[in-house]
Amino acid sequence: MPSSAHTPTDAPTPQVPWECVDRQALATRPFGIYLHVPFCTSRCGYCDFNTYALHTFPAGPTGDPITTWADQLCHEIRLGAQLLADRGVTPPPASTVFFGGGTPSLLGDRLPAILAVVRECCGIAPGAEITSEANPESTSPELFECWRKAGVNRLSLGMQSSSPQVLALLDRNHDPTRAVSAIREAQAVGFEHLNLDLIYGTPGETADDVTRSVETVVETGVDHVSAYALTVEPGTALFRKIVRGEIAPVDEDVQADRYYQIDAALQQAGFAWYEVSNWARSHEARCRHNLGYWEGGNWWAAGPGAHGYLGGVRWSIRKNPRSYGALLAHGIYPADWCEVLTAEELREETIMLRLRVRDGLHRSVLTPAQAQVAATAVGDGLATWEGEYLVLTTRGRLLADGVIGDLLLVDD
Image (cartoon, rainbow, N blue to C red; front, side):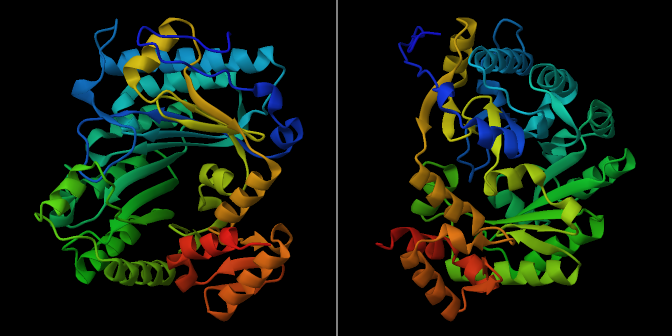
């Protein structure tokens, strides 16, 4: 492939320096595959992910935007696998696969064919965790049965809240009871590892709303919960409504109270935190794919806007679906940008990511000056030493970004 190529829109694509991949890191660390599904039935008002309303998505030669995109994704996977093979880069079989989005449940029965291409081109290890996100309103018993037979063994559903008022403010168009029904349907066809997402701190949400949401989640019997504070990103519909005064701004103090409330309720129900925003009933229920991100693993990424990382090399895929499709139609791998991380950058990322997880950050990663900052955090009740590992306290989790920032900004 040439060092740069041009689509009809004259958008350059970089040549990813696969020769710079650290082969030892690739061979000895977990390897996952992330597949980004960039469309939704409609965009939620708070969402700033690389997603597009399905009716705006290019239909392409098949006349069906989902089928067209699925064909393009399979082409990208094959093209990427060939590029790695040509340069002698051989990742191990994937120990995790994750369909994210967007709304992967809109793929319906097309998902097994994509998974088959992943098996063919990349390999999937025995016992691999294979996850798909799903929105409750676009699932059915037939969909879950199809996916389970194809090898999907973990689901993550976007419940967000059991309060109709909160869902309406978030522009979520599912009935509050639909998430519960979807979980029951998934359990009936054999899914054991199930996650429900919550969003807390929405303007107008009450403590009772949060209590009911957590109780609803616990009663379903899922073994994993993710809970995220609502963030208002510039450019979103929610941001514009707040600027116009139609909705009250987010209150960070209230969000902190909600986090304490959720953490206490989940712990009482038998969940344990293992990352700032994630709780699991058991070690086996933890999301292995996401742990790969936080604990220094490698992952291949495909689909518009996806980001990948292999042995010190990071790259992203072209975000715009039309440009993405045009590049693939010309046989060009649709990379958007790439970088090779230095040893110091990798060390800093280790601090940023490892401190978010329950297992903590090893003392050896810190410089002497950073060790002093860590001691201050411990003295302030934000962290504690568990043997050689620095672990955030509950209050420290709320202020994780600040603790990490202090560690990274200190001068040696």
